[in-house]
Amino acid sequence: MAVIPVALAGRAYEVVIEEGLLTRLAETAAPFLKGYGPERPVPFVADTHTHRLFAARIDAHLAAHGLAADWFVVAPGEDAKTWGVLQKLCDWLLALGVTRKDHVFALGGGVVGDLVGFACSVVKRGVGFVQLPTTLLAQVDSSVGGKTAINTAAGKNLIGAFHQPSQVLIDPLVLGSLPDREMRAGFAEVLKYGLLGDAAFFAWLEANGDRVLAREPAALEHAVATSIAMKARIVAADERETLDLRALLNLGHTFGHALEAETGFSERLLHGEAVALGMVLAAKYSARRGEISAGDAARATAAIAEARLPAALPALGLACDGAALVDHMRHDKKAEGRTLPFLLLRALGEAYVARDVDLADIAAFMDEELAG
Ligand code: GLY
Image (tube, rainbow, N blue to C red; front, top):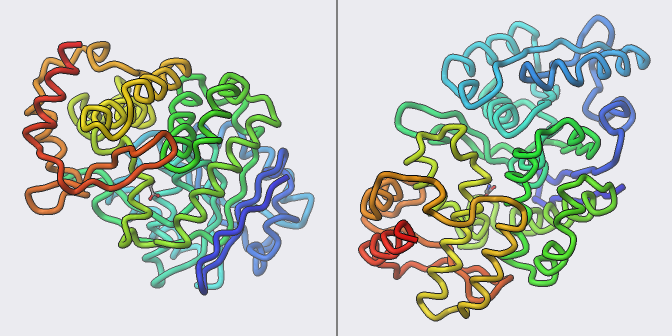
């Protein structure tokens, strides 16, 4: 078991990692279940997959403790992060009579967590919520830190709020049913923590990544806890991303965003896969600027390829050129006027925000990478 504090003044909370937590909610989340009972069910939001996999177990557990759940179930995937679903969810919460003292439970991956967090930020100007992340990506990244959002026609996550959860409960056993491809996509975000700020963790992942991907309990808990501890430190120091510190968590995301946009934010390239390839490109571009050695860039690339994540652009079979990819980057919400901050590497384990990157040079670099 690991308990990781997120030390935000006035909004401090804990991330608890423990096998079997899902059926120990009544004890572990007791402070956030106050006010609920058999006549007043606990609001749970899930998608059809997480509802099918875990709802019966949670219902039985709560019933044994004199509690009941009321479920709001959304379709799986990004389509749930829309104005329409948000409106229905807010109306449902209001019809249940949630108060600002209540907590809503979000059981799912990043989509469910982002949707529920945003709904809870606006309903009655802010009700509490507890995250129960069910994907590796949500466990190590999106469930912690309070970024919540929906998508609109203008782009992904452009409407949202910072709204911190009251607790994050991570049950590693839920990953048992996660498809391998999604496990690897989440592992990309784990590698990100090593690359951006912890060389020893990166070396540990090089040696033990296969144990994590095989869901070996001790290795998995170490990887998740180390990742969250770094995210918690960064979020506590720069909650609203104003100090170039939280921005470090975007390593691989600017390149990755362009690749996701070019592939239509589709199953062709999952977010974590785009981040993986984005980190390869960030490492290679850092080597091109002479900031890390070609050997270090090759080491980062090898760790990503070893996890069977995309590590070379030609494999994507894109029909565009570097200029088209740079155009996608300009629409990234991190764009600042005509320029873009790029997350680059000074060393394996040390990322920094570069503000002097010439987008024409990025386009030329992408052309070279597309050619293989
Ligand atoms: N996923 C990046 C952040 O939470 O800041």
